[in-house]
View (cartoon, rainbow, N blue to C red):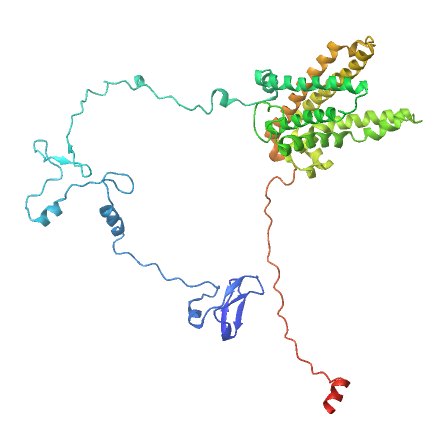
Length: 439
């Protein structure tokens, strides 16, 4: 019989045949090794093994002395130069009887010294001492840092006001001008469609999708990618990372915020009897969608998963952002008004141009429409930059899932009860077997 304790206090009583194996404790679930008979005396009452006392060293510095003497070179393991001079004990061992003094006087001449590695003669030189006031420490030139990590452009800390001024830099203005040129390419396509040529009907939605993907790239570069400048249009031309995923983020945020307007507008256009009620509902959902769109776009572009687009998580994202979210919402309102004015107004201006009709409203004249489109493109980029800066400041506070690993406490399952062996049951022979035996 082998009897030994577990670390939790439970005592095992096992047969001798199980010595050297393993067993799981029924109380704590710990897997323990079954000791041999000769090892039982080395186990404490708490289930731990007894340890022998560490041996005392007769000369603790013996190993260090051996390393110091037998390592090659003129330096020890710490990089200090070795003292290769002979000691008085070494001279006495040779039998000279006249050891060199450790601290020779000034009038005593020493023999020549040679470098132990190169064999070159070491010559002494005198150091002039002109007094403590010979050199003024203030006149000693100080070295300047070659890499200035915290000065100049490297010390730039973006904010909403700095980002607005930084949009007028030449690289950012070039990016926004390219986006305006893509909008301008849509105008002849609309002209051709109005003429009845529908073979290129998919070109206009494709170009609009490319513009939306660019705005998604701006939020990603300023926020998660921690960049300060606008990305080039279509970024690296990766289909999934630079085109499809950013487009899905922007488009899904629009659908999430403004999808009730689609059935309401359809009912209103059919001439429903409740026009006043439908109009009130449209105004209400436009206000709610305008309030939630910046947070929805930030959630999709920042977290990268549609699971965080749950309404309660979007609302908590707005709360964690704070009062600055009101400024972002105002920027989105200005952006939506100017962008719709420029985009829809340009389509109407093209229709009037085809019919050679004068503009019915001065608000939809070409100068105002182009100016509104330019303003919409500018404010849309500024909105995306503001969302990226909010991500930098509050991403660790947002209630998003699938962002970091959350460690959970893992407990061992309860041990399985041992199986009982089956007993063999004697069965009576069948009628056929009995008749065969008789034959």
